[in-house]
Image 1 (cartoon, rainbow, N blue to C red):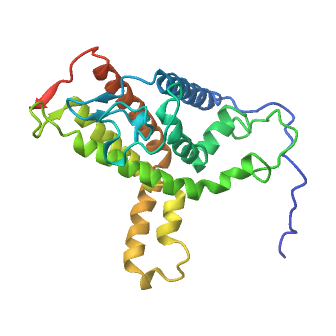
Image 2: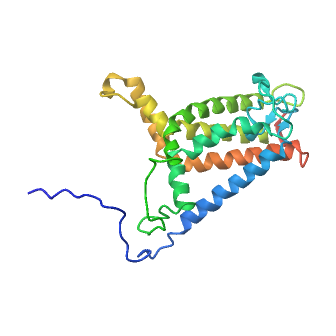
Image 3: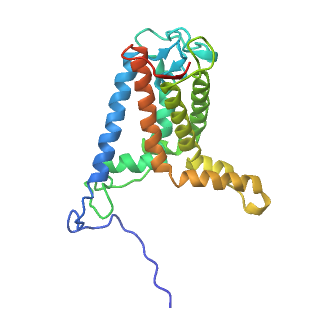
Length: 267
């Protein structure tokens, strides 16, 4: 005899805030501090609007790439030019950062991260939350999470531009080939960014979705298996790429500001 079907009538009722005895609050607290630190740094860095281009080695800070405003430092715009005229008080990153942040904000992992750490919805498993109602992602503004797949395409374009930035960073003092510490950091950053971007659920669906028989599509099946491997490490790659972007941006800022010289390995 099969068990009768169950229906949910609302949120789970907990008689106590939690019965857990472990330090369940540490992960959401660490996430809150980590994401807050990145947001604060990003805001400060964006509105500094300086020290983002090192012409000697072609280092461009990732927060300012691509630099599309006519207020960009000469040389920082690369092959894309400056198609967007902006007042001098508006920093160039405001053109591109909304698309990059949109990709991160609508990412499946980051949703879980900031829902738990900022909105405590819920803060952890088996822990009650202060919200009395739950509408999921069916109403504004959370219904906008459904555009994640479109932000994914924008993130691909930005990753391509950052790859170009990394290639031209192999620049020596005399204009020839060269490698510095900044070059290595930029390579690490772009590898992590590609791994995070390609490990996205939208990419996984793009390469392997709507297929009934993988055996009839061996190339797409191979692509799907590779993306799935990245997807299984999506949380790790999300944090690693977020940290690497901040590290490279800070490093370029310090070099461009003259705080110290870029250690050169070749030329």
